[in-house]
Amino acid sequence: MAFARANGIVLHHEDRGRKDRPAIVYSNSLGSDFRIWNEVVDLLGDGWRHIRYDKRGHGLSEATPAPYRLDDHIDDLAALLDHLDVRKAAIVGVSVGGMIAQGLASKRPDLVSALVLCDTAHKIGTDELWNDRIRTTTEKGIASMADAIMQRWFPPSYRTHDNPAVVGYEAMLTRTTVDGYAGTSAALRDADLTEQTKALKLPTLCLVGDQDGATPPDLVRSLADLIDGAEYHVIENAGHLPCIDQPGEVAGLIGRFLSANHPAQDSTA
Image (cartoon, rainbow, N blue to C red):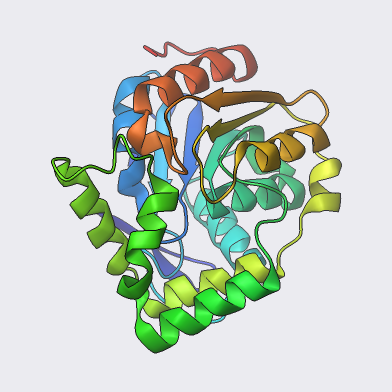
C-alpha cells in the first residue's frame, strides 16, 4: 500500500509498472475504490504504467468533512500526479471519475494526453436527486440504498444470487465513509462541466454500458457530441461499471484507442 499527502490530504494509491512506460491513470465512481479496475489493469498488461488511487473519502484515502466540490477531487488528483512526477497521462474515469478526468483536462492540460470517459457526463443528475441522496446517506446510511445502487451498477445477468462478487461490491459501497459519499454527492450536484468540456481538444473515447441505470447511453452520447472528434462505443450486457462486468471488452477498447492516441508502447491488450 502506498500513501501520499497531496492537496493537504492523504491519498491511497498504487503506481504499478515501469516509470518509462506511458501512464494510464484511473479514477473511480461514487462509492467504490480503485479495486474496480483490477481486471482491466491485468488485461492491459505491463506495456503501461498504471496509476490508481482512492479519491477523497473513499477506500483508504482520508475522509475530510462533507461537502466537497468537484474542484477538490480535481486538485487532489493533480497534486498526486505532481507528487508522482507524471505528465501527459491518459486519464480513464468512470462516473464521477469521468467528471474528474474532464475537469483535470481543462484545469491542468499539461497532465493529460488523452481521455477515456466511461459511463459519465458533463452534468449528472439533478439538485433534487443529489439532495435526496445526501439526506438518505446522512439519516439512514448507505446500506439503505444498496439494493437500488446495485441495480444501477450491474445488469441482471451479473447481479445473480450465485455471483459472490456482487456481495463484495455491495460491501465496498456500504463501507464508504458517510462524508465521502455525501460529500461527493454534493460535488456532483454542483458540477456542470458543459462549457469546459466543449473546449477540450484532445483524443477522447466515451464508453457506456447498454444497461447503465445511472448514466444511460443517450446521456453519454451527448457528452461525446460535445468533444470534437470523440469516439463513442456502447458495451453490450453491461451496467454502470463495465470495468467490472465486462473487463475484457473495456480493456480491449482502451488498449486499441490508446495504442493509436498515446505514446508508443508494448501493450498486450
